[in-house]
Length: 343
Image 1 (tube, rainbow, N blue to C red):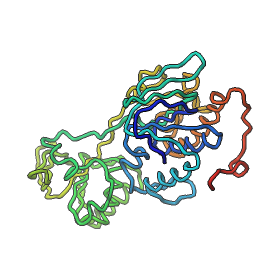
Image 2: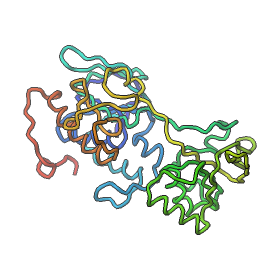
Image 3: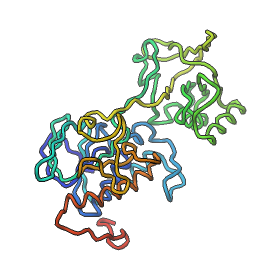
């Protein structure tokens, strides 16, 4: 993987906005069509939410892989795109967009990089994102040491006493996974019903029945206890004022992500605050030459799955070919026929 170390002027075929799994696969699809790519991402590493939020969490719905972690998926995608030598511009966000009279685009980033490109593929996931934080006093003092919003290494919690707060998939999945490692797992939720996948909720209740985790419901977070950034307890409280102190080493707060499109919202693209409307047959937005794929793209009956994003990337790359090579006809070939350099 080639990483650009400083701001520069770049002339290339396709600019890919977002270096998550779908953005990485866009490099492959474009590369198979002989289109050169540069990739911009706001994070300082490739992989998007898979790397930042759940690198060790198993993913079960990638074809031909019964199970692999988020980081394993990213690593395999990086290996797949290596023959095409993409250049990554990390730790910066796209800002301005200008369309030239000849149909090409000028794009600038927050770090001063200037792109001149023929097509743009937006694979920005949910846009710029950050965790929704619980409104607790002195929360920042414990962040990164006792309070966490995602798990980068599950071994950090080996033999620890932890509180997991939340009622969605992330809270349930990590409670199931960390029950194997932590010495004690409390799951705090404000209501008896959980919002996760039925099979996962069933596993959660089975673990609770076996006393491998403790469900603390209906409670919500109330306060933190500790000194000098070292967490020693988490206070919880019911709506009726009943209180408990859970003596723990860490709090994992899974209340979802707060996300927005950032500067993309000012590009004149049709959609909502968090999604862009596309033609599902081409992944085209309302601006010719600009495409959107993955979770940021929407259309009727859209399924937000990684494999859906992969299929949209194939549509976008083939549609982008006409903008990159307007004088060439595209003759479709399967990869078994064309092959890939380096493999």
